[in-house]
Image (cartoon, rainbow, N blue to C red; front, side, top):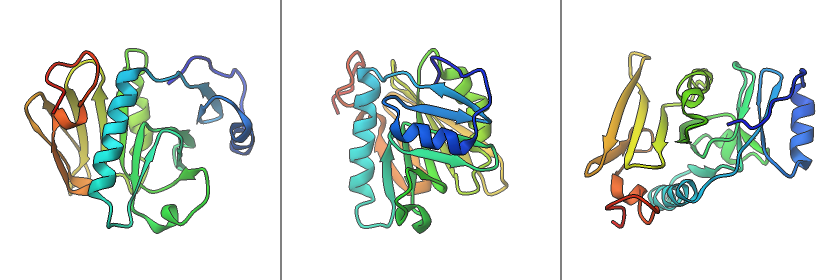
Length: 194
């Protein structure tokens, strides 16, 4: 997530105003602003594959598939994050012209060595404050593996890991595919040409 961190408190209003004119993206977490690192090719290919798969699946629904240029506002956690991919089906988001959404049902983050611990820990805890979120997915960019955290009916988050040769299921959007479809044409991944 971060390359540099501001050392002083910034209000949400000042963050949003600055973000609208900034040439680079920043995430906001409780008054601190973090510059975001550019994505590498595997990250971009995986995200593109997922956007295509999800858009085809959700074509005749009210849901929107949004890539990394939209922020998610987490009011209770006082954060704005740029997920790698998000899906919202809430008309308050789909009809809004804001540069953020409030009601994601599915959030996907690509893991990198510099962000993995934060994505699994503090960022996931922040995302859990979203009343609409049903699934949080962490995707490994260097091998065919992803971990899906799914909100159970009892209110606890249950983890399911998928690997090579397995069918992936995203319950929040009732979507299934072979994991190879997600990794299709990703450089350096064997058997990713499904």
